[in-house]
Image: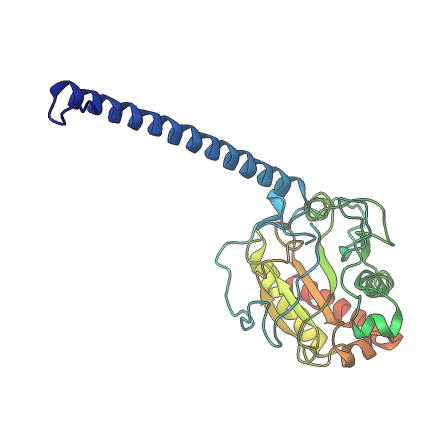
Length: 312
């Protein structure tokens, strides 16, 4: 058998050439595979971003496709009693930004204009009615109603009380609607109106059945943050002073991540979580006409007291 000496210069050169060609082939194969993987990941990332921007998904600010109103404006489930969804205590922070001049009221009659938002009630981006919370809660078991219905009941009673006192009222909605309205749309509607003050009405839910009572939210991210803080404080005092409105003392919270409808509005703004639909005690109250009147009365008193304290 013929053998090629291992120390033959020609054989060694051949081996080096063969190894070099093998390395080049491996490098090219690795480079092609890497390029294909990067391309696939890029396409997937682009698709995810496109889907995210196209959907009604709450973001950080209402001016760039916020939280909806959670795209839908549904506040997420609370995780405990006495704090927000991250178990944070009620806020004691003081906004540092200066308040701007309130937008002028262009009405000739000089009436104060109150904008009322009954949370949910519009269709989502798929044309399905956004009823908010309700299914499986004690409130739904008692009444067959969802959050959007409860919000509207309180909003209508509040409208009635405000009109009786001589205020002008704008309603975000006056029934269930097939129209798709995002959180940004709600914020823009308020900012483009002649309203002097805004209130958004919701009902709460929690994984903790003992969580109960009304809660208030305002945002330090608004240009009118100082006014919002004052408004929320006065509103809490008014609800606490209204018998039958809340099972517990009404606390004020701020900058809850999923509450977007109160962010970016240029007038005094507050969101009222009227009760916990997941609480048997709250549900029993909220199912009555007396509670609806008490809650609307407390909110109306809060609006009146705030406007009186800030007049001039």
